[in-house]
Image 1 (spheres, rainbow, N blue to C red):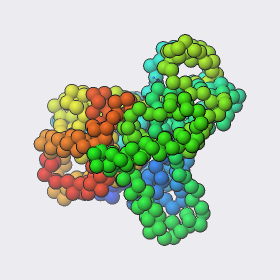
Image 2: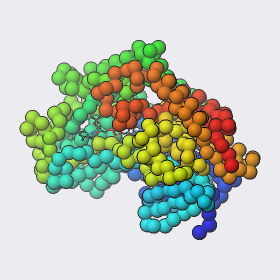
Image 3: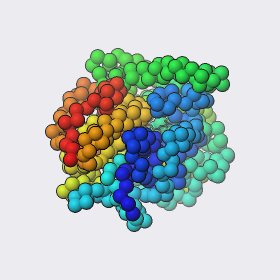
Image 4: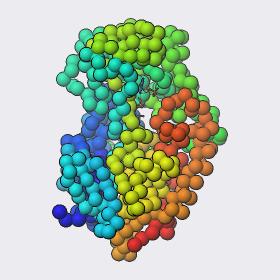
Length: 491
Ligand code: NAP
């Protein structure tokens, strides 16, 4: 097979964005590989009841492709999937996609100066450039609870929802109370005869101010795009303020406390039972963990057939769950809302071997997680990691995609301009970036706040907050377009 220009791993919003950018730059021999049967990444995989985006869609979308037809401020997951499809078609990148193609390994070939990409079925592709856009929340985490395999009833993972399984009249147990569970629990409660919620760590839940976007407003958005831009400005500003609160903990601590108070008021209004409120009160600062929005989560937990269990789970038996106090709850269906394995199964999601045989996953684990501007790593020429350490900017993944597309534009534009065929970030630039983000993190909630009990995936297994880029979104976007080209070596 011919040598490709670019292999992109992942056909979610990151992979689509990268393909659009590279196509604009004139690359044509692009292949996007995805292990799933369709595009959309997390929005294709997740379809659990209640799924909706938890960032206003005005912000959670490509800047260059506003969608005037969102039905709500927080639209359901299916609309995001449709949006992915429409964008891929409009920018004509659908044709690059190959589904049901699991990538196992990518290796830099020093002699040919190309990437060799190996798929699970043994096929091998040669490409000049490699981009991984494999997402963060893509590898499910099964809880390591004894007896899980022995459960004789139905087990459903939230990211592989079985819509044919009717929960009506069932006794249901759900493990986990993260963002997914907060959306799902009210839906489960509406169907199940009895629902037990197993909570290990309480979550700050603030009211969700959602609204339908009426057809006339959608019409105005379509006819006068500036109006939608104005809405976006407002939702962007709100989330930027939340980000600033996390990054400047000393100066904005009061605001952080105010957010925790908002969650407290949310509990107080919904729940009369003091003991239940106590159990639902987190013992870590707001923002240490991804905060959650819901106006029906707390009220659901007050329903007579819904029970919150905070004793730790000791084991699972064929017909139920036994907690540490010896109490057994008999259930028919077990829902696992136990989240994703970020730090072991990701970073990177496939094996990536760079120059001199450097194994990226191993190197990150031995030398701490790091990536220049959240995208490139020394010893890995012609490689962009869209889901690397420090890549996640702000609350919306689209912020990250936005600055990464700009980074790709500047970097690949320079290749075209100079006729070079290779880029590699210098060790000095990478070290300086790492030092800079390290210093910025010292002022953040993640260092100064009380996050010990949060069990947050923002922190790597060594307790370092190496996921979020500790700068404003504006800074990330500006640097995406203006980073010094001397930070790279071109060849
Ligand atoms: P998560 O936030 O990681 O939550 C997983 C939950 O499972 C936690 O409550 C965790 O408890 C619990 N858990 C895990 N292992 C357990 C065990 N062995 N025993 C007991 N409990 C266990 O995962 P998520 O809820 O799927 O959300 C992940 C992220 O996805 C969110 O932060 C958000 O960014 C994104 N998300 C987005 C949307 C949206 O936009 N629509 C919707 C849902 C999710 P601990 O906290 O104690 O570990």
